[in-house]
Length: 303
Image 1 (tube, rainbow, N blue to C red):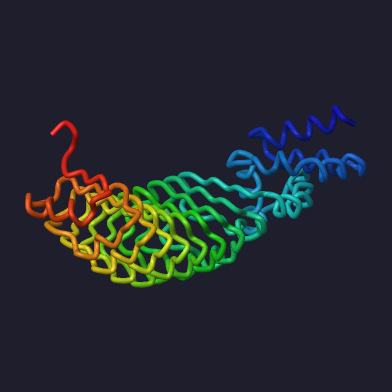
Image 2: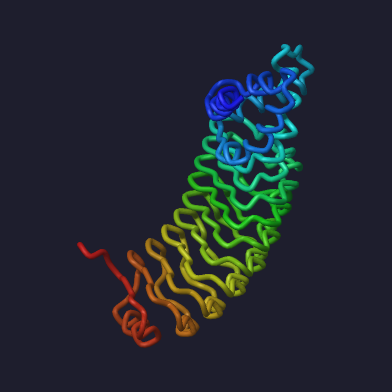
């Protein structure tokens, strides 16, 4: 039985269609089936796209009422087992998210690369155990809709090198979010609801078209890092002084000529990067007095 079990596991972790696994364990060997069910968890936990792709394709075939082969019929029996154990899903160069994801009840991490997603389907908000959502170069999504707000356990969200145009109010529903990275998009507007992210520690909005920050940015009481480089900012709101835990503030490549007096309230600020801003010598002297314990960088070391 051990040899047969090892063969099952080799199929689980290979690029072979996972239908073969179901076919093996459904051959009238209850003992083998039980052992696979008990032992496969650590293997399935590491499954990524290659082994899941067969499941997704099978689900699509069922949905379209296609004629199933004998192996595919056997594989259907394995699907509920996988739904309870798959925790990570990776998808690349697809047009949409497969609806079968809504059945992965313990899914905690999703990664999307070059997916031409235009909006999140309603069922996506039902992934209530999802803790991490990462996206790279998904260029068709312009904003987050209501479905994103359903991810009540989400702690990490990155949507980089895309074409987001605004941060909508729905972002404020992510009450457990600790890290938010929206680098190199086309963001111009930020909803006041961003101030609802009371657990947020790291916010990176580098490389967008932001001209103004909402006053509610000052409600991010746990924020430690704020990156606003390469935007179109002319000033910061006075509420910036409420960020008592802020340690690193990056404002390079903007159009800021002065910072508000309230900047002196940032008692834990260790670094301030204000490279390539029109800061006068008198403003530099003023900032040195307001932030005596902060390392302020006005130019590159090679300048």
